[in-house]
Length: 142
Image 1 (cartoon, helix red, strand yellow):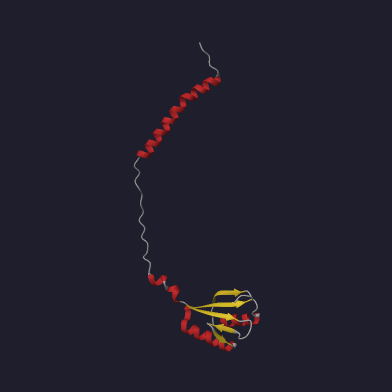
Image 2: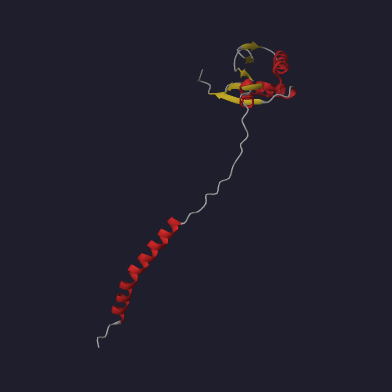
């Protein structure tokens, strides 16, 4: 009788099992492809968008308020304003004219006196106005 070493027996068993495992994997893949799985669909009803709500942001009035370092104290929409009282009156008129639609952008440079900036924010606080944006310039830029 022919005797086989343990290593030769393992190699012979491995050679027999490899094609069988390949056939099993092919059968599993074939069965998975042939199974008819019903598609589960969920209907989603989205609300219709209203065009008037999407355009509401463009109705805002933008007021640009520049804090000057030299000359007149402020520029409100390119209009020179010299005194605090005059600035208060102009901003109050804008608030009554535009209400909640008023957005204020404060423009300043680094050379502007801090006293003017503090005065400006105290006036805005008295009128219950909020600053939408703060634009700062370097002192050398135009």
